Amino acid sequence: MLEKTVTNSAPANSVFDDAYQHQVADWWNNRRNDAVNLALGDIDKFYHHHCGIGAIDEAVLAEPPETREQAIIAELHRLETAQANYLLDHLGPLTRADRVLDAGSGRGGLSFMANLRFGCGVDGVSISQYQVDFATEQAEEREVADQVHFWFRNMLHTEFEDQSMQAIWNNESTMYVDLDDLFREFSRLLRPGGRYVCITGCYNDILGPKSPAMAYIDGHYHCDFHSRSDYFRAMAANNLTPIKVIDLSLEMIPYWELRAQSSVATGIESYFLSALRDRAAQYLLIVADRV
Image (cartoon, rainbow, N blue to C red):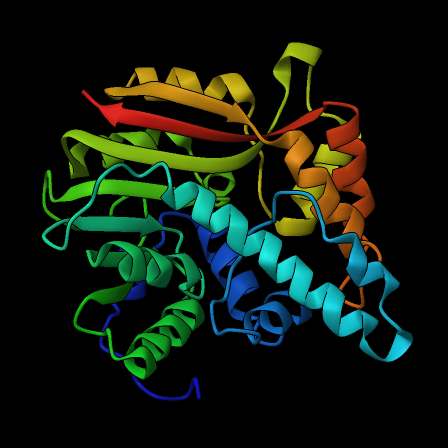
């Protein structure tokens, strides 16, 4: 499916700023057969690259052996979809005339959910050509390629017009970039009064430096989680005013507990659980308006 040529690309030297970004792109490009995201997304063709929130349906653990694993996979996907819907709930009123940006759009799951809910135009950007190709084919199969577009571009310099976006979001993708550079670009793109929503893990610098568990998670995902205070400092410096901050850390724990019991467990689950239970990590939703 992914061999077809797409036009939403740009010369590679205009996308990557440094060797690290090349490495991140290579890492995602090589995850064509990752067991977790594909297994969950195959359920309804909404492919996510983030965690889930909310209480689990305990009934899945009581399923007989022949159906238990399938039930767990479906429940994990339900929790991830609940997280995606929770982000969309905070984007503010959007219309078909509005344009929104999915920064770090992965295989496109949340972009399609936004278009389905609001009818708005969606642009997704990723530095993984594989992800752009996958999501573009999904848009064509869904017959929304005229409304939802995916671009092989860098979220730090998207090439879109000034004040062209009514809303922008990051869903667990800010840990790959410098926050000052990111929010400077979003401040340029958002219309005055436009909305930015971020769901992210971060380390709790009130308790001190990054914990060993968080450092291990960094290495696993080839990223660098920021401190909680980094987000608010960088937003304040770039005309983004937080209007709501919600700590979802406790809501996230059931997801990792269930995933640890599944066939798609990778071993990272115990590190997330340790960091969340110790409060070394926090999982935040941050809503900000462009002033």
